[in-house]
Image (tube, helix red, strand yellow):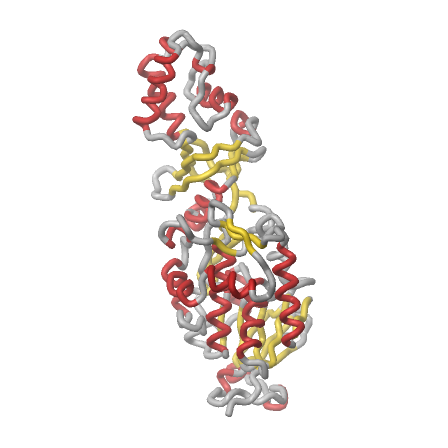
Length: 426
């Protein structure tokens, strides 16, 4: 018969708290403690989705998982079969939470309040007896056999049947304190590479962590003067690469943002990091092909041959943006269409479909900052997320080398990972 198991969860974010609740439900006699370095649990969850909590996505129209999860798509295909969006919504609906879906697939609580999700998980942890200890930063996880922890420092709780010394852990904290556990779940979010290397045993493979989901700084005064302009159907790419994204684009006072930018930053996260966030950016403002842009120009000229170039603009573009593009092509908005000529037409088509700027740095996407990298998926059992080299050590959420584009996909990865770990521990 199994004895009482002591489980330590490092990190009180979405993955850590969800895992603690699900684990405790499945194994009520377990002693589950969640350690959080910050002052309160789920601080990041409370602000996600602009404070509304984009809890997941319906995945309808998302296309291949590789377009959603630039890193970890094969694992997520497996994980979503075990615990997908519908399972998640049913889980929270059983606690009285109701949801609404947007046309783009993003799912939010009907209350439009992220704190409803936070309070639901906090309430469940209290009722189930999960201990949440904030303000304690774990700085080292040591398997007791490797750490040489004396028997009298291992606590009174017996290990589960079948667990050996290598499955007992000591946790060292920045305040000098130590705690022991039979099992450890690391759910410390997007931790830095240096922090993970100091925290984990050397046998755990770490993929260097770099930022993902960020906006681009563009040093072009003409573009930045158009701040606030939104283009609903833009295409962005990095010249000379296969990195490409589509969607809405927002011009800001520092450069460009919006879904298209964030997608591209996610796809090219490591590429851009290696180049110190400097790369040639191509923007198709119209969503048209080269042939489509030529056809539109021909139609605009036929509709008013004596009109000025700036008097008519492609659908989806504002007059101010169109005048900016005309100037970018070396032309004048007051020119008449017959003055355009073949060379002018070619330049205007190029600017409409492949306007080139220089990415001159990155800016964080508010509080929803995400990293790619972390614990390598090759280091874990993909069914249980248990470390292959350190039995009893599991990982959940963003601490793994899994990340997604914006739209609720990162949170779904956290929920799915947490569920797999909870099932394995139970």
